[in-house]
Image 1 (spheres, rainbow, N blue to C red):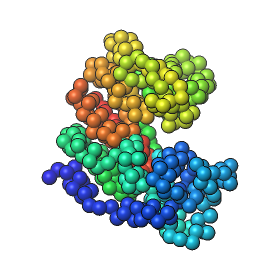
Image 2: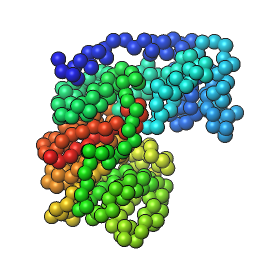
Image 3: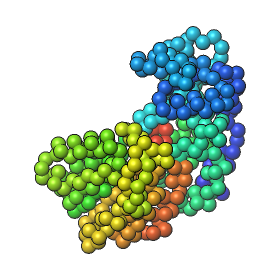
Image 4: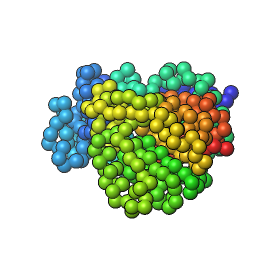
Length: 380
């Protein structure tokens, strides 16, 4: 039995926490904690099942005293007034929040039963899954052979541990098996080594935060190409570029494009933040490009190092197809987010390996609760 198979077998037992959460939902004793976009989505799905929360807890002053879908928004402290047994369901998840720590803090406030909305998703998978890298076990385990094949590509002990812990978390929702993120995003010590002769592609540049981190490490480089499709984020990226010294800004090029397998036009959900993403229900239309189409001819004879970073909210598989030549022929170093789709953890390493077997694969967990999981593919 492989290490992967052992994780899968251990995750087959019933989850008592989800069983307990089911009881609270059936008895009408739940409070949602967080009146954001995720909270609204979950509330609507609960209401479709005739499950009505007691109220929504949110400590944002501007939201208190209002309502969401007819449910009152109150301060978290209002939970002290509840007379019946209830469950507090946390509807927030971001790389800077650690659910286990938050649960401990809420227990200290006297809130006994604290759950993540992910546990609610496992209770109502038809309504709430897939979500980012989470899906029902049956769908994940259809890829059991690929999971094993992908795991075999990782020879470093730390990467193997991260892989197995992420797999276990996705199958069991055991938050304690995911370590706190290291925050050393895209340029971790001992992983990425970028020489002075280098071209950096920042795919999903947001407001220039990663370019800023790159420039802090590399005073000498050849070119930076940064891509950000969200209009508001792109304006921030422009302002960042405008604030650079002239000698640096002349080598930094920004594009209001998304990345894909080839040039095209797609609907995009512009949220003016890091969660903006391609969506069939998007509120704007963006152009996409494939990196090979525009940049491979320019770099065909380039002898320096090419480094491609991707954090593009689920579009990574298509964008990797769009830079197949840069990977297979130019041995580009890669830093790819692999937590946006349920099967990215195994399909993306396998795809890269299929077009270029000359890579060493490493994993690093930069965010909390399995967020900001990044694959590093480094040419041998």
